[in-house]
Length: 248
Image (cartoon, rainbow, N blue to C red; front, side):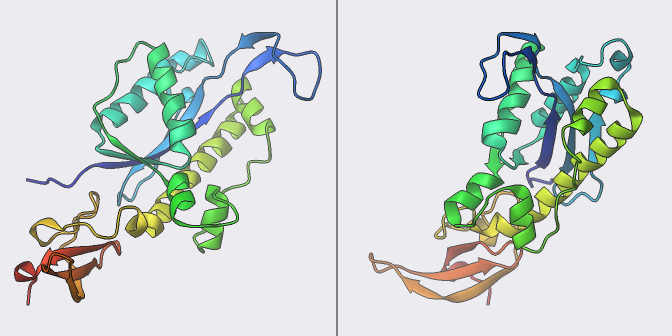
């Protein structure tokens, strides 16, 4: 039986609100003509080779209403419901809440409980980079760069139904998820506290579970108990094992 958790990596793209204002800078919206909706999302399961993109034009409802995201959101809900761990960059503030908002609008119940990892918050908590944006983190870590969208015209093109704009949007969305997985894997070993008990001689990082542990010396605790420090060779996480459980 495979007990390894299912880890979903995803990124969403939304359309801007359409409303009326009196001026250009720091304006209050007089009235909304159309509130934001989801355009598409990209996702992959951790370690899966293929990255998927699901967009509004993929559904028959798009021909009647180019803003109807119900089928799109329902598809995302099913993925959330299947996942044990969900990873997004700035997910706590944006992707998760935006997704949940549209789920609620369309009458969907909460998906099955899952653990969310926000790679932006991980970067802010454990490091001091000049910028915690996905593009900047990936760049400084030597993992690549985000695709240049060319600006808001791309979003307007998608909203109007332009095929070329949609093709570029899907590519942009897909590349974000590919880059996100690379950044996550680079950060993964730092995410949880250093001193974590490792059960059954397996890495306690919930999405790793590697049995390839390397001994890194003996540590004597204040209560006199000695433990062996070990480091997972899969993700780099540190932990400890009772001495009698360490393989010779």
